[in-house]
Every structure is written in C-alpha cells, then in structure tokens.
Image (cartoon, rainbow, N blue to C red; front, side, top):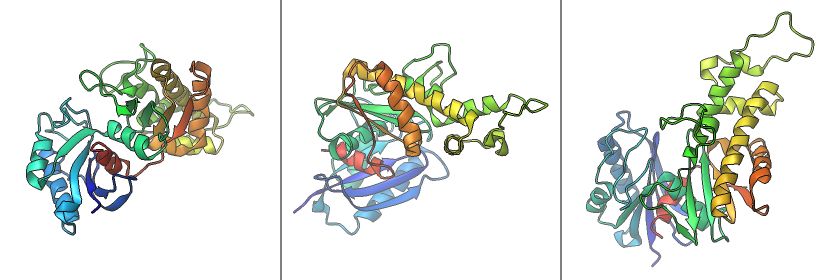
Amino acid sequence: MMQYILGLDFGGTKLAAGIVNPQNGKIIQSLRRDTPEEKTAKKSYAAMTALAKELLSGQKKSAIQAVGVCFDGPVEPDCRTPRFSMHVTGWEGFPLADKIEKELGLPTRIGHDADACALAEYRFGAGKGVKHMLYFTVSTGIGGGVIIDGKLHRGEHAWAGEMGHMTLKPDGPLCPCGRRGCLEALASGPSVARAAKEQLKNPIPKPLPSNYVVSILKDIPRNQITARDVAEAVRKGDKLAAIVWNEAMRWIGIGVASAANILNPGKVVLGGGLTHAGDIFFDPVRRAVKLRALDQTLEVVPAVFRENVGVVGAAALMI
C-alpha cells in the first residue's frame, strides 16, 4: 500500500495541510485556513492540529508514514523546535515536533520555510537534475536554501541560506534584522514600495517641461503603494517605476551572483511573490547575474511551485 506524508505549513497569514505523495510531490488532498486573529503559537498550534485531524479523518492511519512541518521562521539544529516567528508570538522554545508526535502519533520533523521550499524545488520542481542548487525566495522578505550534493545544507548552527542578509551596501537602508544594506533592505517587496514612495516625494516641476511624464503611481495614495503597483506601472511604461524596479532587480542579480560565485550551483531557482512579475523580473536579474557570475553557464530559473510550495516542501523534509 502506498504511504503518504502529511505536510503542514505554518505561515504568517495562513495555515495549510496536505497529504503528499513522496514519489512525485503531488498533493492528494489539502485544506487551508487563515491564521487565527490572535497571533500566538498556542492558537496557531491548536488551529493546525484541528486542520490536520480533519484532513486525516478520511484516511487510514497506516496510509500516513510521517509529518513534515514548514515553519515561518528559523528552526533549531535539531529540526524539532522553532527559534522564532516574525509574525506570530510565543514560538520561542515551543516543543512543536514533540507535541505533534504526541497528538498525531507520527514521526515529525520541522524546517525553515525557505529550506522546505528549496527541497520541494530540488526534488520535484525546477531544481531536478542538478547536484547543487541555490533557492531564493523574493517576497515580503528575502530568504533561501542551499542544496549541496543533493542534500539540504543548514550549516553549523542552522543559519545557512539567509540570502536576504548578505550585506551588499554597508551604508544602505535599514533592514528588519537591524543591520544596514542587506539584500532584503534593497530588493524585497516592501523595499521596492519604499523606494517608489521616496521617488514620489520629489515635487512635480512647474511649469511642466514638454518632455516630462508624471508617474501613474501618483494616482495611488503614497502610503498604499505596493511592489505589485510598481511592477504594473513598469509594464505600462512608467519611467519612474522602471528606475525603482530595475535598481531592485540589479541588487537581486548581484546577490545571486555573489552566492553563486561561492557555491557554484548548477541552477539558481527564484520563487516568491515578486518573481510572479515574469519577464520584467527575470530579464534584469539575469543581466545582472551575467555581468558578475564567474560561471557563465549558470542557469537562473523560475520556481515551479507557487501556492502549495509550503505543503510540498514540508513533505520533502521527510524524504
């Protein structure tokens, strides 16, 4: 009888559970809920276990061999305890794997969400066929995972793959981590939006020069501008938006090339919300990588998985 893996995805804004075929990464059945309004570890854990039990209620227990957990934040080296979450309080020292094993009666392993996504892409997605792979996720934050010789590399103290915290511009903008000039501070979604708002502070000249074009971003209340708005403006030919967007993409390319020059992967897989912009994301990133990568055969490719990557990645932690 085929045995499946239960994948649990603890996100900052949603919880997801899925039954995954470990041979091909296909999700057989899944459920999804919003994270509880009271964003505490205790509430999130209770909601997730209820979700998991609902999903498993129609399954024979013998059909599930293990539980993998994709967690929204760094994890201790033992892969059993979260370090912290940026979005939900109370996870520090929470015995998550122990509690799930007791609740569901199945062996359990937890992993940082970026590590889990890297494994999903390596085993079942865009990274198939190479021995060494780097994964970047570019969204509200920037993170990543490192695959060396077909195995997830977590480092001595499980801090490997923090792509967003490479220092690229020491005197640059402040990062959420408290340091300056990190890749995340230069090219994450909020960073793109912040840079656009800064550009829009410049007053429109009067009288207006004949060749001056007012940015369509001026039509959006400044405090509501998002990276998606900037990307849409780029597609419409907005010059100010293009300056902001392409500068962020240049920094991503520099970060990718810098990491690739150290680890020499066969592929770099890029996922996350900003990558969904398609060619306006990948074209300038690839140009920047080409200028700086020593290995000129390096492939920079889009991730295969989108919405369900956390569930598949959670299962991949147990393979």
